[in-house]
Image 1 (cartoon, rainbow, N blue to C red):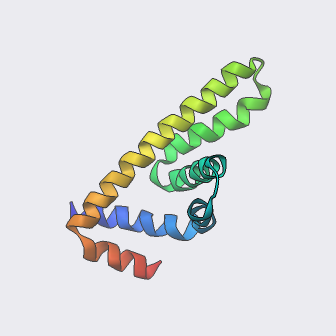
Image 2: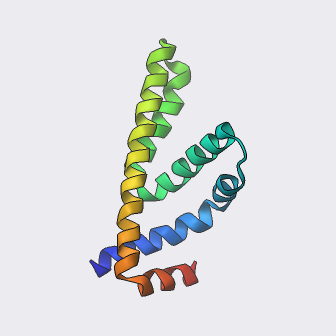
Length: 114
C-alpha cells in the first residue's frame, strides 16, 4: 500500500503542477456553464496522468470527430469517452484521498518536490 501511495502522490504532484491553469479556472468560475467547462478541462488535464488509456481514447474520439459522417454518432462516442475518463479520474481521486489519509507523509514529500 505504501508503494501505491508513493506512486499516487507522485502523479498528484505532476497533476498539480501541470494543470494549474485548469485548477484556477475551476476555482474562479462564476456560472454553471463556465464551471462545467472548467471541470471538463480539469478532468481532461488530470486524466492524462491518472488514466492515460482513457485519456487517449477521448483524444482519438475528438480527432476522429471531423471525419465522422454521422454527427450524432461522433458526439455520442465523445460523450461516452469523456464519461469513462471522468469515472476513472473520480476513482483515482478516491484512491489518492484514501492513500493520503493512510500515508500523509508520502504525499507531503511528493508535494514538496513538485
